Amino acid sequence: MHSFGYRLNALLTFAVTILALMCAIASLSDNFNTPSPSAEIQITNINWFQKQPQGNDEVSLTMNISADLQSLFTWNTKQVFIFVAAEYETPKNSLNQVSLWDAIIPAKEHAKFWIHTSNKYRFVDQGNNLRGKEFNLTLHWHVMPKTGKMFADKIVMTGYSLPEEYR
Amino acid sequence: MGLFNYILLLYEPQRRAGIIMLMDWQGQKFVEQIMQISLLVFAVIALVAGYVLGSFHLMMLVYAGGVTLTTLITVPNWPFFNRNPLNWLDPNEVEKHHKPQVAVSLKKKATQK
Image (tube, rainbow over all chains, first blue to last red):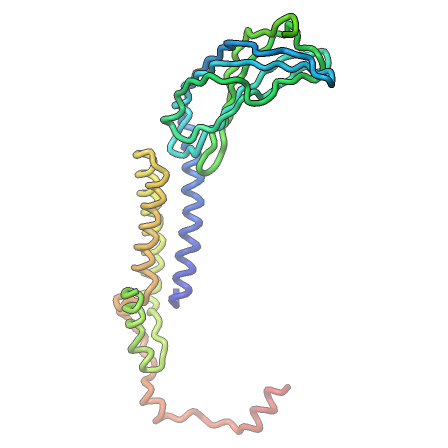
């Protein structure tokens, strides 16, 4: 502590080390949060359902997505990334997951929402297995923190199915 | 900028005397304790304030303020850190007691080895 430069260095180093500890504690505090999210998806319309020239099935659908994800937000949350995936089984793959729509929720106020939208990304199969296929729609979320650990979870909604014939 | 100039002024008597007056040992020990405790206390205050009010931004602001305040208190060579100065030999006294003269050639030979 014998000179200006020495003291300044010691102070800044200690201050930054403590800052790292504070960020770790902030991240740990996220574990005390018990979220209670809810979501519901309705398929209002199958717009079209065709077999592409390459031989893969493709379907376009319109959904009502409503959710209340406000309880996911903590003081250490930067944003929540959500996406809707269609999940189904085929002879070739035990699990197919196709992402249909996603969004970034930047703040708690925007976390309770209702949206009427067609699928943002194409729902294409590896093959032509979609006729009459039963599938789940799963809402996944990633709670992205300001510092520390990211939490991810999902809600699985079952009972959706595609038409027996192409349209 | 005025504050910076004031801090520089603290070193003016030393600059004029041509010496560097550092903190005395008591002062250094004191300053180290103040620095560590102050930073820790501000960290705790910032964490609690941020968590309770639900604002990460607030925690950062409180802590940044605490670091700045601690810097102002502990880093410059304030006078009250120099209450027990070590009394080095006054420059006037040096003239009265000449250092023993070592022959220049002898010194050169010794250092060349």
